Amino acid sequence: MGGRFVIRGGRPLSGKVRVSGAKNSVLKLMAASLLTPKECVIRNVPRITDVETMAEVLRHLGAEVDWQGPVMRIRSGEFEGRRAPYHLVRRMRASILVLGPLVARFGEAAVAIPGGCNIGARKIDLHLKGLQMLGAEVITEHGYIRVRARRLRGRDIYLDFPSVGATENLMLAAVGAEGITRIENAAREPEIQDLADFLRSLGVEVRGAGTPLVEVEGGLPGKGTDHAAIGDRIEAGTFALAAAVTRGELEVEGVNPLHLRLALEKMAEAGVEVEEREDGFRVRGNERYRAVDVATLPFPGFPTDLQPQMMVLLSLAEGVSVITENVFESRFMFVGELNRMGCDIEIKGQHAVVRGVGRLSGAEVCATDLRAGAALVLAGLAAEGVTEVLDIHHVDRGYESFEEKLRSVGAEISRVGT
Image (tube, rainbow, N blue to C red; front, side, top):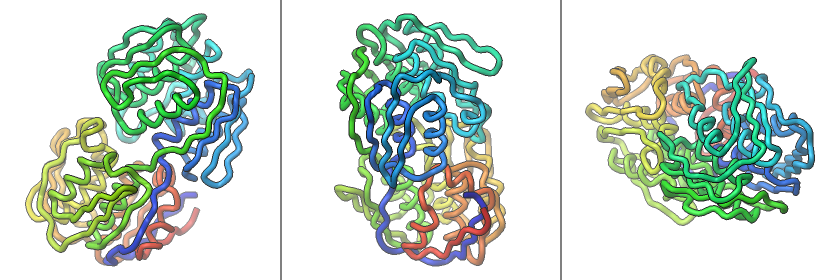
């Protein structure tokens, strides 16, 4: 994929859009399929590059992956490969999630140390510390993390921070441990709950997912499963904000609105009309928006993955808003690109002071990461004139058929080049 988006702004979005399966859930379900030699069927799988990369990782390990439309079938028989190479891991940090299930099932694994990230370091020390507490030996050498364990034993693990990745990796490793593993200060994201549902469908005893205390009773599964991933709340929030910044109206389907409760409340506080429904919500933009303050936090707080898109809306509001980024230290890297489009945003440490400007103008801008790319597309939809967004391979990592879905609700956007 790749290339650039060419957007002619000023068109209010209108109609219905259905979100795809959650990227941040499907990747973890794919890793969890390594726990059993039986076939696992995952439904509602988005066709995005991050999922393609994880499929490559699983195939490299020796698993069979058949992906037809939104349905993926994975069979992880008795294979020899237990090493995820750097050329794959460097493309997607979520590859580190194969450590837990491989150690649980085979007693060993090797994964290349992930490289840097455009939005922050995202250290994996909590993953490794937790694996050591379960009885694994962790060795870092020659650019790889090697984990070995003759026997994993369940125990109480307290996370210094409610890391989503560490919670998931330790849940997966705990499946192969003797006894009960209790993860305290666990992440509470909906994707954690979806992973727990997947494990339960395999016959694993999991309690407390969605709360700060998750318990996993050890015992490798001997059967497969058929599971549909939850809808992507970040994609849903992105479309909601796209409707708001274009002063349009959209029905967003395929997501639980409770997964976006605080984000929707912040949009409403700014002046967006929001109506929750059983399978999604309706949003309607207004001519005038109010400044609001936003602070990102782990779920159920405001999601960091929607912060850049929210910044676009607040740039169109009256007054001064302050956005505080508490999750990723480099998430404001793209602000200079928004300012090229007429925004007035000043960075002060972990705070962004957003002075509403009322209108934006089209410009050539460059996506620095996945969510920044989405935010620049939204800015282009709201701006006067033509906007070109470069380096859109970042956007392809997390949004399925993004421009097609936007065109279906009235946007004038096209992809140029590859």
